[in-house]
Length: 137
Length: 101
Image 1: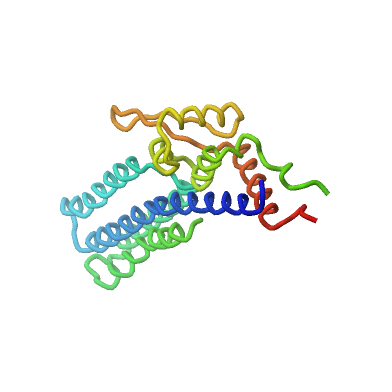
Image 2: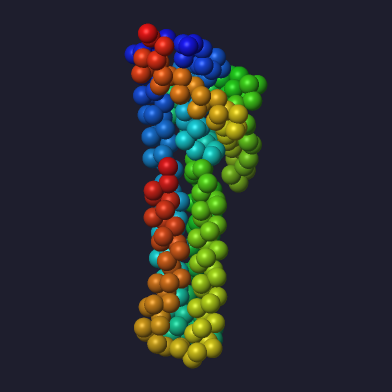
């Protein structure tokens, strides 16, 4: 094998790597969708009570079903995405519980500023996760 | 000083197998059909090359289902990933002109 053949083989390998990386970005879509839906869910939750809480909860449930369906039809599983995704999901769920408890215990129900800040905080792990995923090699 | 061509991996050195391993190295698992289309080979050719890589311990075949449809995933083993890294290093050394003096 001479230098040109070796260089050509390296270029071909890099080209394949780029092709796979191009279709490995789907977790970004999932995390952005979850971030957006959870923002809307948390924001709305502050203004509703009783059975009406099922309305925003159903958005999150529908989004979770879509995430499962969308992830299952992908043909490339990126390296380490489960660990990164789990971190975002875990952090988001913990913040959700903390936010709901804070709103309930502190009596912030119906406060638009609390709704906006709380929704942004709960959605943040997903949006940060989407950014990290978009930068992942 | 030995020539870097001695470090080339005989199993990965074949162009088709090199392409397959390059595709798999960029992800955790890749579906059989995606690899077939990316490498531009037929199903039997890919199966044959994957069997060779599997026998060398470089690739793992994972079977699954999407509903009732069977799906086959290909995954590079840690040994395969290490072998590919060494192979790329040898190629780079050759391309850079190492061992030419």
